[in-house]
Length: 132
Figure 1 (cartoon, rainbow, N blue to C red):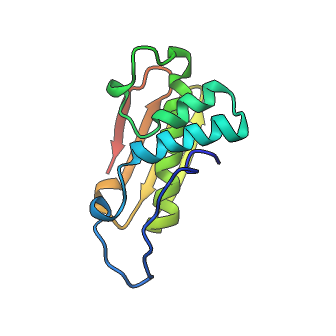
Figure 2: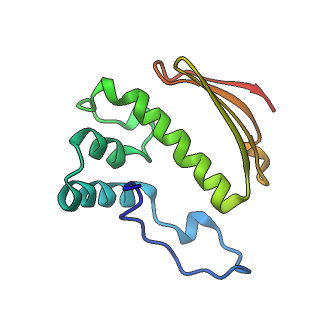
């Protein structure tokens, strides 16, 4: 809930056509602001603040000080954040199952690059495309 507190959104109408890369700011900026707001105004636990702060970073971009124990939650957070965007902004349909630490996601989206079934091991970070 707190991760998008710092998000700055453009004002768009339903019929507007926009290039998201041009109208939306870099996600890392709103992630940082959201983390600071969660920490300083809502006293959210530092572990959650760290996940919020870096949720738009690739794993290789995480600082060395990022706790290894938070990586599974970081990975899950990124999956859920992406799928919620697919559903709310892209009209996507999502099936999501979990077995042990393996998350299986099937997404049907208007943007074909997101269609398919993926498995993500939350513990190791390994991602495997199962089908298109």
